Figure 1 (tube, rainbow, N blue to C red):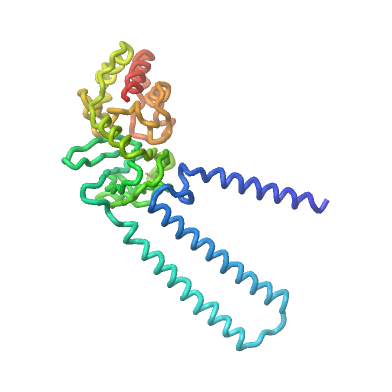
Figure 2: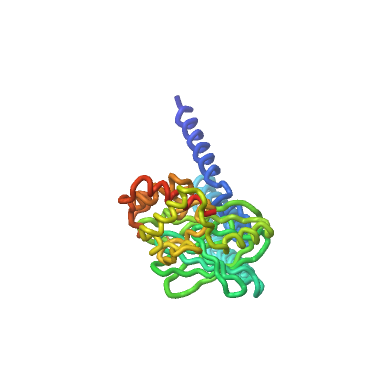
Amino acid sequence: MKHAPARRRSALVLTAAALLLAGCGNVQSALLPAGVEAQKVADLFFVMAIGAFIIWIIVIAIAIYATLIHPGKHDARKARGLIIGGGVILPVIVLTSLLVYGLALMPELRKPPARDGLRIAVSGEQWWWRVRYLLPGGDEVELANEIRLPAGKRVEFELSSPDVVHSFWIPALAGKVDMTPGRTTTLSLTPTETGIFRGACAEFCGASHALMNFSVVVMKPGEFEEWLQGQAEPAATPREPLAMRGRNAFLFNGCGACHAIRGTSAIGKVGPDLTHVGSRLGIAAGTLATEPADFRDWMTRPKAIKPEVHMPAFGMLSDDELHAIAAYLDGLK
Ligand code: CUA
């Protein structure tokens, strides 16, 4: 009888631990770093966590000694020594060392890349990410909700926001930095492993704050260059009749007032650039995939998917038009 609750408790602890570990896939984990800066942040975390655990053990041991092992009156001089040693001298030493260690990380974390290094401007908007690659010649390549990076190369992000405060965070690659209206903040990082990671907004920014994510794809440098060249190209004109009808319906129904598709008359700047939207891993800031059904879903009921989103619903479009536009967008690779 006595063992049943204990067994249940250990089962609970095991389940909690398993869930915790399952949540730590390295797609979005600051504890499984895939970049130079994230590694430093993780090291700092482990130093603090292990240090805190050791100090906790010592405090508990002293408490057990004072209450259970030796509960009587204690020698006044020894007690004063413990208070001054453990309450003043030890914290000063521990906190000063932590401060020195933490400050020493700063210059490395804030170091910008070489002058001709990769620069990407990211703007946090309600509730998506405008991503602009700032090319050396002054040209720009714009996309949305997806950032691709070359492994082993340092990159600098210029972060801003046109509406409210957002916070740019790719846990596996670096610490987080606020995106503040009216000013530009910077974040430098060097990814070390190829793979797909997840970034998120880390500052409450309104109804759909929790639905403001983005994909980060770290590629081999050669593949990255090829990808960036492809993104700089205008959209291909579709050949299939369905997608061709979709292109016409997209332009005729005024989608181009908010969205740009380079190479067409759609030059809107309010919403995401859709030039190569079919090649992305997701739309609507990580809430939907990029299959035709997702595009249709998003066009007909955006506010049900993402509360208070600025994109209006296009429920007035016929089924044929919706299918055609979805086929067109899906084909924009
Ligand atoms: Cu943007 Cu939270």
